[in-house]
Length: 295
Picture (cartoon, rainbow, N blue to C red):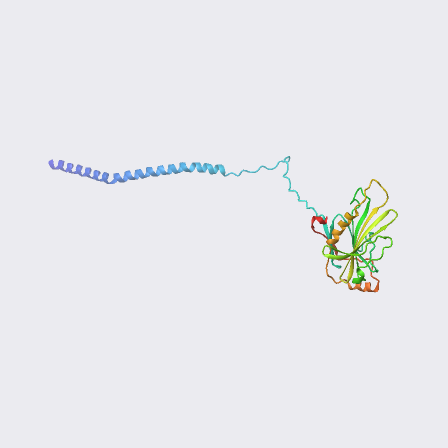
């Protein structure tokens, strides 16, 4: 009986020792696992909370705001205004056949050879054979409230003249106070010039002729200012010198290049059968800005 009791006590002690050994071994692991699980749950909970505002923010900013379509009654956007380009006040006449060019105010009337017009004035060469190149005429209202009638500038060439004949001018018997030819430099050219005056029953004609020999021909720039001599107290006398100054500025801009004139013109000039006018296909007009004093 005593043995049985001792055996039971031994068994109970063994069970207690087994329980204690299991608790001492597993309890720390259980606590550590529990702590790790709690920490993990806390971390997941915090991360979810931190992600929620960002998600809300992104969800708020994601939809694109559509621009409202213009209604039928709304004003349309104004179109860009077109830039208005102003034409330069002066143009340039170029004639490649005779090698001549000059600038002139665009408001003047330009007439080229070959076109029927009374603007191609009478030339002032000592021999026949003149060829009209071009002519300019000032506007009829260029000098209001004066006795101004008209003013023009004609350009001609005479291939029948020699250099000695180019400096000569026919005598003007109707002008007793005719000036003798003199050397005048306008721009880059040296001209031989003369001034003449003629009168009609109701008009006076003041003329200036400028001759230059080059390209084996005599070039002429002829100016004419016509005024009325009819007595009219409402009109002031025209200052002819101012008109000539404007025309002389055009002549001063003239450039004459060295060119070979058509052989037909030279042969016709030698035979004395040079035409009074020719049609110049190479004559063109182009715009070009020039100094203000050329206006």
